[in-house]
Image 1 (spheres, one colour):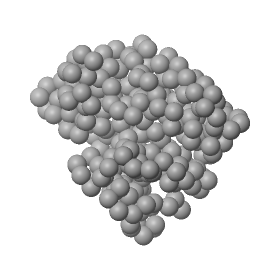
Image 2 (spheres, rainbow, N blue to C red):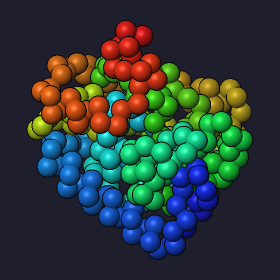
Image 3 (cartoon, rainbow, N blue to C red):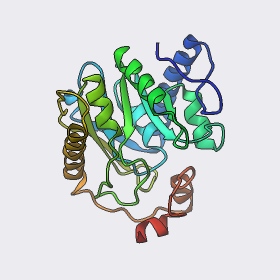
Image 4 (cartoon, rainbow, N blue to C red):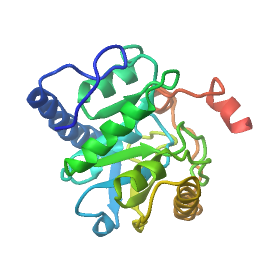
Amino acid sequence: MTAVPKGRSGASTLHPLRRLARAWISRIASWLLIRAYLRPRLVDRSLLPKGPAIYCFNHLNWSDPFILMGTLPMRPRLTFFGPKEEDMTVGGRNRLMSWTGATIPYRPGKNDLLEATRRVVAALKAGGVVAVAGEGRIQPFESTVGPLSEGPAYFALRAGVPMVPIAISGTSWLCLGRRIQVRVGQPLEVTGRPTRDAVGALTERCWQALEAMVAAEPEHAPPGRFGRRVTELFNDWPEGDRGAAEAA
């Protein structure tokens, strides 16, 4: 069972069985709620490795982790690395993600990298998969992928597991009944140690794969007032708002 830290980083101190129950409840609830509002589709499911892997996905909206919860197979067990927050008890999105029991939070202002890496490797050794929003933030455009952090590649090389690019499309605006697509890319096999050169090369390969997978995606017009409200409900734009992010 994956170990979790205690305290204000936001990880739960729940008994492991209760944490597991919450993770399953979250997966089932995500499956139901997503299909009540959207039309999700998982493409190229057969490419998913049967065992442990790092999933690196693009990030368009606060709902993306829940989209993955509701579309990816129930096995292997899915855990998310992040979000990067000093305190997971602050903010509705953080509290919701923390409640699911499916997160490995990382405190960016603290010396938490070794502990976070240990928890990621433990999740993989337990037979699970770890999903990482490679861009480390949400992006406003469907057809582009921002620069990827080197974290996903480092984790994959450190644990010796494949790195799988996963492209989400359609979530830049959450319009009722919109088709949402989760496309699985060809797994990137890894060899050797997580040296700087190896991590950089694997990161570049994953970025190229994701960029190719989303390049033809159309940009959607904003929905009505309710759809805009749902879309921006928990979005955290580093620039302050969507308009500033688009301009940047």
